[in-house]
Image (cartoon, rainbow, N blue to C red):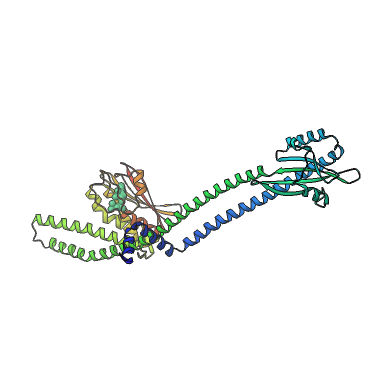
Length: 463
Ligand code: ADP
C-alpha cells in the first residue's frame, strides 16, 4: 500500500464528527476573535490567583518563622539566667526543661551543655534523659558561633535546618560564669512541621478553590461560546426574516392587481342584469370572498409597512367626533343587520393632530370587531375628555375575553379560539395594526372585558 493511500484510509477511519467539530471550533474562534480575549482573561485570573495565594503563603510563612524564633529566643532569655544560677542542680534543670517542653508542643529537644576544660561539650540536662552525661559533638559549631555573639540584643544564635523533609530550627545561647566567661549553652531544637502541615492544608484548600474557579471559568467559556453561536444564529435569523418580509410585501403587492380585476369583473357581471337568481347568489359569494382576500392582503401590507417603518403618517387637525361619525355611519348597516342597538355618544373633544385615514382605520377595526363579536345587545361608541387626554371608548355586550385572551390580544395573528369565535372569520392582525398605528400617533390603547358580558376598547390621546 503506498503512503497516499494509507493516509486516505486513515482519514476515512478517523471519526468524521471529531474532525468536523475541530473545524467548527476553529471557524468559531477565527470568526469571533473575542474568544481569545475571554481565554486571556481566564488565564490572567488563574495566574493572578496562584500568584496572590503564593504571596500570602510566603508572608504567612515568614511571619510564623519569625514568631517561632522570637518565642524560643524569649524562652532562652528567661532560662539562661536561671541555668547560670542552678548549674550544679542537675535535677532542677531537668525538671524545668520538662516543664517548658510540656507547655511548648513545637520543642523537640532542650539541652544544657557544659564546656569542660578539655573543650568537650558535656550534656548536663536534656529533654531526652539518655543523652545526659554524654558528650555532644554534632552541634559544636552552633555553640562556638553562639559564643562569638552579635546576633541581636539577646545574643541567641539560630540556624534553620531540615530532617527527613521536616523543617527545624536550632537555637543556642551562652551560659556565663559570674566573671563573664562562657561555661556552657542552653540549646533548643524546635520543629516547624506543625505549621508546615497547617500550611499544606491551606494550600490544599486553595487548590480546591482554584479548581472551582477553573470549572466556573470553563462554564463561562462554554456559555460565551454558546452566546456567540446564538449571535451568529440571530444575525442569520434577521436576514431570513428580512427576506421573508420582502417576499410577503412583494407577494401582497402582486396579489392586489388580480384581486382588483376579480372584484371589478364580478361587479360588472352582477350589474349586467342578465343573471339568474342562482348566478347572482354565486357572484355575491365571489364578491364576499374577494373582499375578504382584499382585507387580508391590505392587513399583511400594513404589517410589513409598520414593521419596516414605511407607513406614512400625515398629521393634520382632525375633528374627532366627525371622523368617528363617518366610521360609525359606514358600519351601521352591519350593526342593523345583526339587530344591535347602535349608539354614538359624543363628548366635547374638539380636534387632535392625527393622520385622519389611519385614525379612521383604527376606529373601523374596533367598531367592526365590536359588531362582529356581539350576537345581541348593544355596541356603543363614546368620545369624552378625561383630564388632559381625549378618549374614544368602543363598548359592546358581546362574547367578551378571558384574562389570558386579553393578555395576548395585541399580538400579531392572535385570535381567541373558542366556540364563540370559530364561525367568525378574521386574520388576527387588526388589533396589532391598530395598536401600532395608535402608538405611532402618540396614543395608547387598552382593553377591559368580562368573558360572556362584553368588552370595552379604550383609545386615548393627549389633548
Ligand atoms: P380578527 O378580528 O381579524 O381576528 P383582530 O386583531 O381585530 O383580528 O382581533 C383579534 C382577536 O381579538 C379576535 O380574533 C377576537 O378573538 C378578539 N377580539 C377583538 N375584538 C373583540 C371584541 N370586541 N370582543 C371579543 N373579542 C374580540
